[in-house]
Length: 406
Image (cartoon, rainbow, N blue to C red; front, side, top):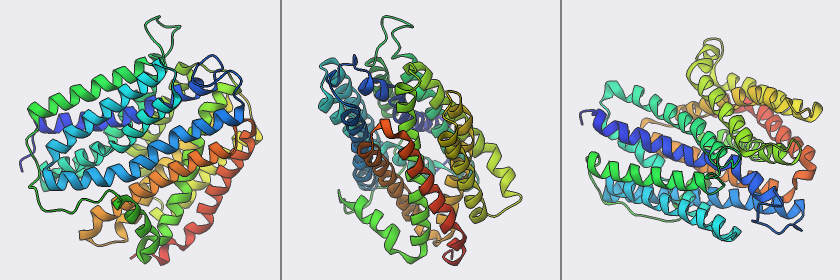
């Protein structure tokens, strides 16, 4: 099908909005649950209780994503991209509204329900990716796929800024924790309306068996399929380390350094900028001198160095320095691991192996939430040690990847 900007641009915006939704909550959720005056938990709630619910909020999103993304992907194959994509965006908007109502009524469980709904309907990202591939001519496919990564990075930069700035009452009395969720809901609905009028169905529907539990089957295959089993273990360790650091750093800023949401938002946006720069420029430079499997080891070592800096030098400015190394390392390792996944299977299994990678990511981030729930923020040293251990494990296993690659 001939490529069309009229179709491509709304899909590109879908990817940005989806990444925004992921990023906007992180500057908010730490202060929301750890500020005694936040109202979501009783003033008497201990740090252990607050850490538990912080982790649970993140666990619910990624467990729901594990089930939802493959489910909606199957639906899009069966009923078409357009209908299911619009449905996903509508459900995402509903989830943001439920989260906002949780904030209005000071109901943590309603807030978690809204986040779970958003996680389940986050399949819009993979459907938009599939639709872009549908409309891309062979000579444009590689370019368009690279733009998908750019869209995700843009959303990841914008999301924390929206969450941090528009939740800060010191900027305007109109702002508060609820504001970013309303903005995200409006953007999702506007995007759905835009797609209704601009998107032409890109996929020829076919008979597909829809299975709500296919995400579990895909994740299981990551460790039962010999071709990718070793890669999946390394990728799981890598993503768990990243998930734990990414989730806990907001708590460190809130509890130890008393950051405002907008300051935390700037920090997460900085991470997004570093990762974007890494994915577009830095990795190309490194790949001129080393192969992917070697670069995975080097990248994990770089991220490990950043985590060790946090352990040994717990100064207020250190997270800004250390995250540069961590983001560079994680960004390069992520891209290399996806490339190694792709190289491990034949042409007809590319879609499957990318699904495996996404399932591993969802489980890894859910497990990251489990770690934070189990170890409260008062013991952040232990959390950083666990993160460092996971990266060290990935480094130790990396040399053996060459024996598993096809």
